[in-house]
Image (cartoon, rainbow, N blue to C red; front, top):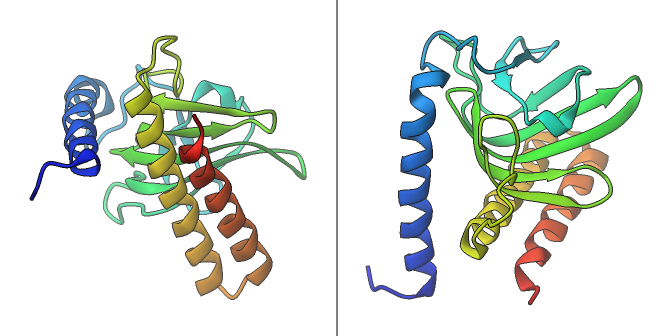
Length: 176
């Protein structure tokens, strides 16, 4: 694999995610959720995950892969908060063993992007540009996956909405 800008960023993301995973593995637990983190359970699928603090205290829903054995979210997807019948803040990104690793929170007023610190996404004031760019790449991929899931369920309106979200997240990579 030639070392170009994109491959260097992928290697950087891989190394960064490896460090974050190593750091969180002691608290996340592959089988039994840790009590050190605030765990949520999707009310419809019973899948467990940790949501970024900015998603609030209301019910949250996971759209993405969930282990059939542990009922813990893992992979690229979306955590959506609900406030009654209204949509709340949303996380798009990667979750491992139920714990967010990297992604973007859309609170309706803007984006918070970066790595998960155990409480929040992108909380580090000095987030590196590569972390922010990688966050938007993962988030756009997550929104595309959510769109495909809705399309598979024959929900054309939601599929179209999340395809537009993916484009908006992807467009953040073209800023300077």
